[in-house]
Structure formats: structure tokens, C-alpha cells
Amino acid sequence: MAAELPEHSCHHRTLLLGNYAVSRAVAEACLDRGRDLLSLAANPFTPPDVVARLARQADPRVRERVAGRADVGPVLLQALAEDPDDGVRTRARVQPASRTWAQCRAVDRVYGRAAEDIGVVGEMVVEPDGEWYRACALSGLPLLRRVAATWHRLPVPLVRRLADDPDPQVRHLLALNHPLAPPDALLDAFVQMPRQRAYLLTLDRLPRTGLRQLLGHADPGVRALAAGDPALRPPPVALLRDADAGVRRAAAAHPALSGEVVEALLWDAATAEGAAANPGLGAGRLHRLLDRAGLPSS
Image (cartoon, rainbow, N blue to C red; front, side, top):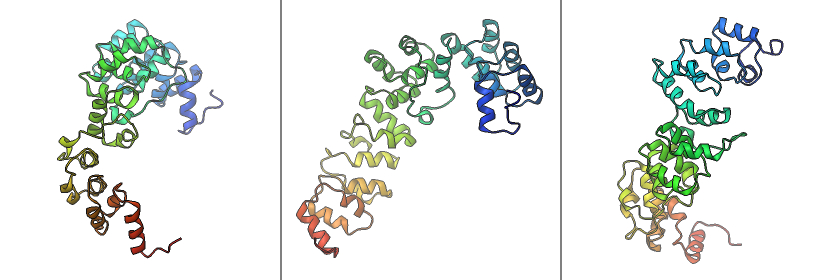
């Protein structure tokens, strides 16, 4: 490794130091210079005595990485469980339930981040066994329940259990990752996580009706979803004047609007895009609109 390791910081250097066998000379050089310590702390092949020295580093992120290793011994783990940094203590307390590298990687995917930042979690190259995920779902530690919520094969009784979890991050991860997450969990995730809405809108389980209570929501993205509720009677005409273009677009596309109203909305720049998508525009009305636009007939 010493011969192949680039001197400058780059992806290849990080890849080597985080995943491949580390020579003692390379490890000592990194420690002496205080460089690449996060990579060394995560590398399964870092020598044990070097790991022990990394556990005493001033940077709590390095100590967190050490606490998340599958091979950390009980004495060192106990010391990290009493670390002055809360993040280090949390990671160390979870670790007794994560004793393989695959399990540690599964915890790493959710540790220290909100569900909105994690999003949809793909399968790992080496996936922990199902029994471990099921045990995580029953854990008293929210972090392990978050891990369980990312497993798309979690059985139905545990899905129901996590859908009612007191930790919103557990519920939101379940909504994003499990095909059987209940509709109300998806709707709550949609309201609470704006950056995940584009994905949630692709899911058939996201409620599209019964949304009247959200018409006055402060978030325009939520109002737009409610404005598109096809079951609303009367249609949400007040939202045709909403300050947000997305809300106006959804309201103008509502199928309960009369054809005359929709045609009038087509000539208003504020609502034209939504009105053009309205399913109430029949073929005859569409042809007349095209004629008025001056398009040549085929």
C-alpha cells in the first residue's frame, strides 16, 4: 500500500485507506500527521493497537467510527459508552447488537442523519440476515428501530408496530422504504419531508383523496396535493387564486370543474397550465381550442 498510496488527497487514497489492508508504516504516518483518521477508523483491516489509539483521538467523529466497528473489544467499547460526546456514546451503546460488519454498515446508513436526508435505502452487497432486522424492530433503541424500518422485507406485524413508533424518524423511514407501510404513514411523511415528495408522489399508497383538512396548510406543496383530491365537492375554486403556482395548477386541473370554467382558466396565464391538463376537457373542446390557437388541421 505504501507504494500505491497517492500522497495528495483524492478518492483513490480514501478508497485504499478505508477498505484495504493497511501496513503499519502507513497507519503510523497517518497518525503522526493527523491525516485520514476517519478512513483508518472505519477500515476493517486497521491493526487493533492502531484502533485503540484512534479511540483516544480528540475528534469525536473518529471515536464514533471506532465505536461502530464490528471488532471493537468489550473494554474499549465500555470506555466509548462513557465518552463525553453524546454521539460517541450513542454509537457505542448500539454496538453490542451489531457484531458483524454487515450489521455495522446497516447502522452506519442511518446513524446521524434524518430520514429526509437518508431517503430510499438500497440493498447492500452483503445484507444482514432477517432475524437481526426483526430483532432491531423490537429494540428499545430508536437507532436500531430506524435500521429495521429500512428493510423492505420486514413482516407485516412489525410494519404495523413501526408505523406507530414514537420516533418520527422510524415512521418516515418505514414510509419511504417498505412497500406495505400504511397510507397515513406516507401522508405524514409527505407533509413532514418536502425533499422526499417527488418520490412519495410515485407511490400508489400515498392517499390522493380525503385531503380536505389540508387545503389550508401553510406549505404550498401540501396544499397542492390537497387541491388535486378528485373527491372534493365542491372543487377547491378558492385555490385558483393561491399565491403559489403549483397550488393554482393543481386546482385548475380538478376534474369537478365545469368545462366552461376550465376553458376560461385556459386564457389566464396564472391557471392555463393546470387547466390544459384538466380531464374535463373533452375532445370537441380541445379541438376548438387548437383551432383558436391557429394550428393547421391535419
